[in-house]
Image (cartoon, one colour):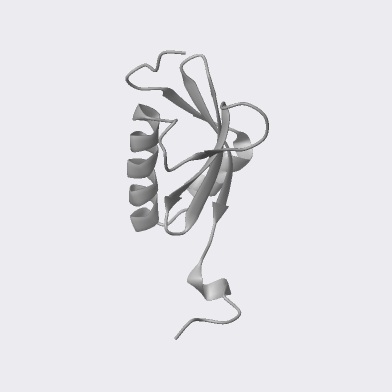
Length: 93
């Protein structure tokens, strides 16, 4: 399937809620990463999950992992996993 220049980005309700809870600096980094992903959702930094190539996972920033689906010119962010250094049991010092 040929890739288009920019995919339309959509969010599930849970992913949109998680996105909207990000503080401004993390949100800016997240938005920049999503913009890059919309230009190349099959980037070699992502990996397929499940059967086929359309369901994928990528680490958008050092603390945000996204699961997404690609279909008909759209990129649907399904799940965001957001990590925070405050919740680490054992830090590496």
